[in-house]
Length: 392
Image 1 (cartoon, rainbow, N blue to C red):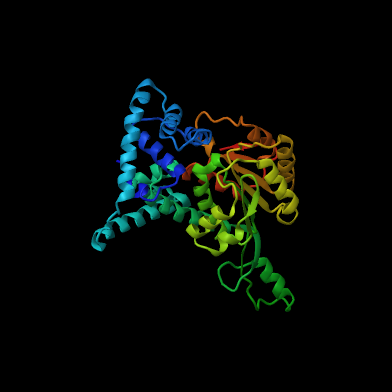
Image 2 (spheres, rainbow, N blue to C red):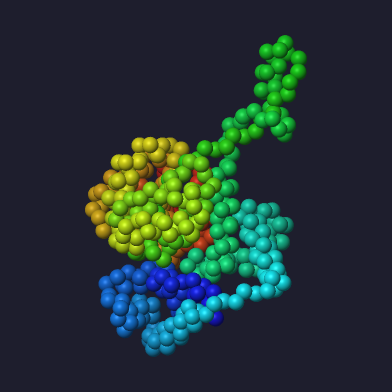
């Protein structure tokens, strides 16, 4: 069954394509994230007001066999009917008494996800395993999440962001809480008072001052993923004190203040309205050059991790991209590039933008589901490996 609650809220063209692909997967179509992006790209070259062109373009990209080609029109019209029904009807809310078990179940699932996130001991993992849908949820592509699952995932992402924001360093500072006695500091302090132990000194680990710069591609080829990545950015923006966020397509825009001062839905709406050419073309190189020239000096240093979210499709000059990436890599602690298409088994960084940027990337990852994203976030805690580039 198609999630009609999701259909009721998905009125954007790109959102409906995602729902169509999800619907076709339930009909045994093997559709990858790459093909979803290809479908959206193909539509940009066609007069989408003509439904025949629209349908044929989708059919050419999303079908892989003669049987799928024959059945596509039937499934397309079935999906269209369900979409119309969802748009014309309001989903009735369940009585409060009937909602309670579901709410309790969602909370239990969230607690299980927290345990999975925190890497509990083996006994606790066995208890977590009782929620047999947790593992499948962590491996589910973000594009296939229902609205309820998206909300649950947002809570998990916020927890992950807060955990990373409060990582501890090896350095210590004095603490009023009497938790861990610092023997060396106690001896030094009391030596100044004649050697008698008159005062005990307690210390705690200092917070690790990690700085983040987030750069998110919101061009047409990233339209299927950009909303979720803005969700991810929002989780980080509200957990870190030292974080700067930019979005780009054909130009660079700083959006840190919007994400700091507004609820997510309002912030997303304001960003999409203020950014010209949202879901347009991409000139990654010129946007990164703009960042290095106008913001790099004040924002980049050896405590800064740069997190880039893009599929690497660049229509600009490779030389501009190379110089910008070289400068970012040289001045920062680490460069992590998230490419949602990297989650496909047949992915290869062959597009010109990715090939140009690759020598200046420390970690290239997909982050197309929670499992892959968790592995990426671990990289925020580690130092740059000068001898090895990582692909996860």
